[in-house]
Length: 360
Image (cartoon, rainbow, N blue to C red; front, side, top):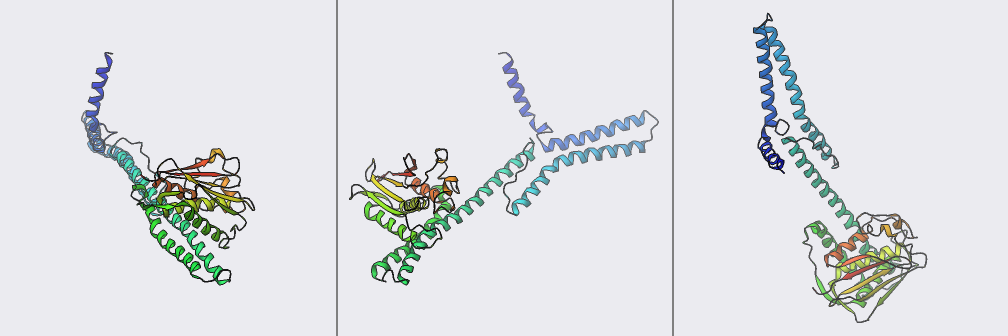
């Protein structure tokens, strides 16, 4: 007990002398260099005075000793700068993974730590930019496929160019324009300033429209792996069920979940979208079920990560690997509502459960 105050006093004293520590201050190291050079020169001059050695010989040895010590100290001081220069050149070429060593305790050590923080921030910005481009490409694919399906049906004579068909094409075109603007909101996702335009809507006709678009996209042939054999089923109870949410964001959720389920369904499989009333006012509980191989339990916590394409994502007749963004975008849209999304237990296939809180 009696030793603690002494140790605390010694620690405070040592912290106060920190600027004089050659290992903690560049200025102290330079001062120590000057002092050592002066001491060596004084010592050699003293030796010359008390011996028969000529003064010019002592002067030469003093200069050589001072130059060697200066070179040694200078190399130690400039090594971090050389390393930072090499890392900066790598960053200029697009490699943000390199870092500088931070073992020093002086000003260069502080600079190295600040430099590494800056490099990490730049790497995060570059990663976010790449993810944004991938997200935009992924989300634009759905309305483009739907619009192409409508136009192909009209050109092939499968559908007549009546007002209803044109309205479907117009809705896809309008959604395409909205997505161009809305997906740019991903750049503001980290700041939590993405707006939500919630409203009350009837669930049955809304989900029926989403599944109709998905069915047309599956049968359009827009992709070499397009699934025409998977049956989409809608189960809404009660039929007059209403919900309160951002319809466009919810469209992203359902479309991505259905697209993912169709890809991993077996031949002539069935994908079910089930909607029920949640716990709150105008809340919504959604489930998307398929009959595919399912998701292993040890991978369920990772399926909503961006660019995650685990082994389960490679299975199924329609599985193409994808970009690993569909489920990530679905989670992002659900999080904006303050809801939850996750993989639920299912005796067969995969079951994704979505809960939206409804009216705040």
